[in-house]
Length: 333
Ligand code: DP6
Image (cartoon, rainbow, N blue to C red; front, side, top):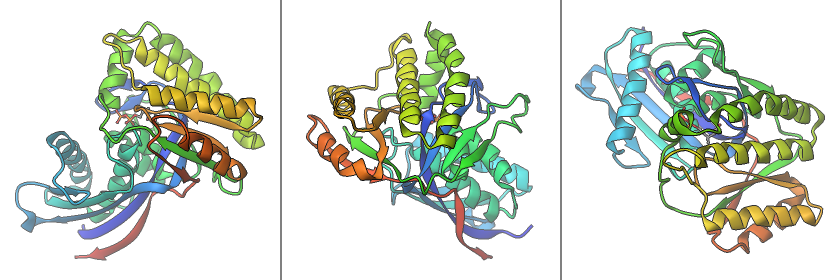
């Protein structure tokens, strides 16, 4: 097998029907399906090069710095999967840049592991199909499986114990609809508890976890229909209730997992007020305090003005549907 250097990019994705809970933590198999929108403006660019001259450790640079120990271990474990599959032992040099504030609840692990799956597998001499890349990316982070594809994407929980059918698939490219996601950043801090640990605690201790899981198939069906009809009101309503239910199940865990801050609540109220004025605007919130508002292109400036004036909102930016993960360039060593 020929080793090369490969640079790949991936956009992050924001789930409209959330993933929150696993059926198998070792293979990172989700307990239920989820549905997301891949974004153009926020993402990761990663270069991977394997080589025997690199010594006994993988070298990783994340946004120009050495990553913390847990991130380094997570990337190393992921590279081990790629090495095993490719039948190589060489270590790798990984240079990765996020245009997403890392670990601030803006889904850097989704684009991070999608870009890493594409770049590392190719650099190791593998030629994987999109579905295989999705299954590989899932091992790094569940949400990363979705970022292999562009536009609206549905993640299948799968039924096989080896996880081969726990992969994402594209539902609709998402562009041409003029849909936008305005992100209200409410904190620059790293999130208090990572999603992996938080969803495990929710599954183990929250009395609401079972009903959360029960609500997902109906939400997926509704979201699929809304996308097929290009019905923003219907899609937004699903997204908002999925986020609220996910957070409610997490809040009810012991100890409680509370990502919301006063600024989060203020931004949620801003969205309710915009809707009272007749605007189609709906929020979603991930494992962090930021509020992401789904709206039409024509409403972006009104949504932006209202969020910017909301106490505790630091800044806002607008994102739009983007393509799936892809190779930017590669060189054969
Ligand atoms: C709230 O994909 O970060 O963003 O599989 O443990 O890495 P791991 O979890 P991760 O969880 C994402 C949680 C979420 C919802 C979502 O993206 O569906």
